[in-house]
Length: 257
Image 1 (spheres, rainbow, N blue to C red):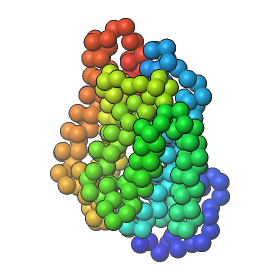
Image 2 (cartoon, rainbow, N blue to C red):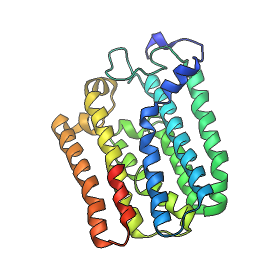
Image 3 (cartoon, helix red, strand yellow):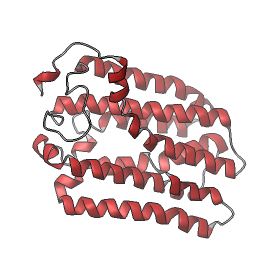
Image 4 (spheres, helix red, strand yellow):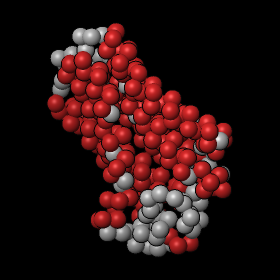
């Protein structure tokens, strides 16, 4: 654990904005926009559900980022020699206690906002919400953090892909189909590609911290091939689906994710 972060202050608002990692929020917004576009294409658009789903997705991403900042500090994965954006807890800009309170508060807001979606969509939406919060914490927290076991890629593919797209579609249309779920793989694959880039960047510091990402487990060559495969498949899936369903041009919006 880096002693530099043994500060007790909570940081200013600019520090909190940076800690929320606004550049990463598109990964959570894109599948919601896609699910909404698919619902609109089927004549099932429900604006209130779409807006609430949008903000729940943003808050889940922010809560996950805060939890990641906190738990990576606790595990010693974020050190002074890490490459990339500054981590607020490691840098001493926000205290560990304040960061812990922050991710708990944000996930509490997700729960409150999500009550409407649960009322509208029932137990499938409740399950998606609970698992999203749970895995947002367990990604780097708990006794067996997913990101430290090389399972982060699977988590990102599923939850930033079919789960987010399918959940957004379902809460508006009150139904689901295989085309929506397959289309949802595209943003999930792109988010996985972004994760792979980060893992390549952090491979040495992750190795020293015992964070066994796929880049650490199988090497940088494997990670580069994973990245290429994710990007190629992400582009191929919507093209194939449009070829199968030319009456659904909204599927091509996946290419914008």
